[in-house]
Length: 377
Ligand code: SAH
Image (cartoon, rainbow, N blue to C red; front, side):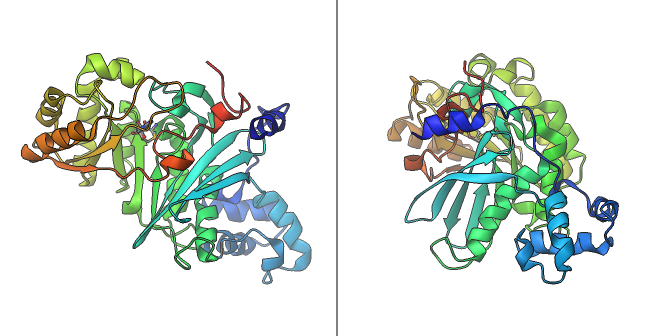
């Protein structure tokens, strides 16, 4: 039923793209946009305070704006970009995945994960993904389009709003962390992702006021873009999806490796660590009998020792139709032990949301939507 609805909803609307939104604009541009509508520039600040501070885009809440101006201002600068098509929860409501439909019928997903003392929003940066990693559900559907900065920010705002209103079990709360580990390759949508990071991290009323150090940008390894990010002077965390220490295997697991290989990706990662002073996360999905051999743990340790790195081992989440599965617990422990013995910081990532397909790499709205948002392969 869902598949049918999604397919129909997507028909005939592709290609239009998202309308512009306040969250696409720098603060100065917001004032100019408001003046173009014949309103006082400071109304831009008021709208920003409502959206980023009070987390509302409902004209009824904007009692400091003349009633007659609210409608036109909201229509022009705070249009609804994403509609929740479906919400699924697990972990007693503390993990929640949302399937969003954009105005042009593209689908994306975000995941909210509440832990003791922190809440992480995992957001999508693109509808679909062009990286084609064979173990990743999103990668199977291909790229539909880049999300706008405001569409990315809207995912965080939605989570922040649900927390502020006490809709997530555990009492009212705030989003503390944002990870670009949903659908898409963030560095392939560079300028919009950067604008979204600014909105997410600037103080209210310019943005959501989340710490820059609590934002993680994860990449399959787009080397020039890693260099560009290093030069931004933003202390966001970089995560590199390595998954193999050798080019022969990484060429298969992360096809963009044929363009920028392991040595080039890691050189860019170390330059990033040097520029920002921040430890780089090395993501490594453990796939049974594919990349989990003891010798590969040693080869990985050879590459990482003496560098500012932290390894996140992720038991593979098997995706439909894939012949690959997670490593045996014993193999995982041995892989972790060998890295630790070599002095490498390593943790096994918890895989929140597995049962709602909300775990790493399982976000595949495009595939499930029967091609509404993705190019079938
Ligand atoms: N394009 C970005 C973001 C992708 S999603 C990137 O490649 O980093 C975030 C992480 O989940 C990446 O490390 C990705 O390789 C990993 N991932 C994808 N599919 C997975 C799966 N089925 N099991 C475990 N991790 C997966």
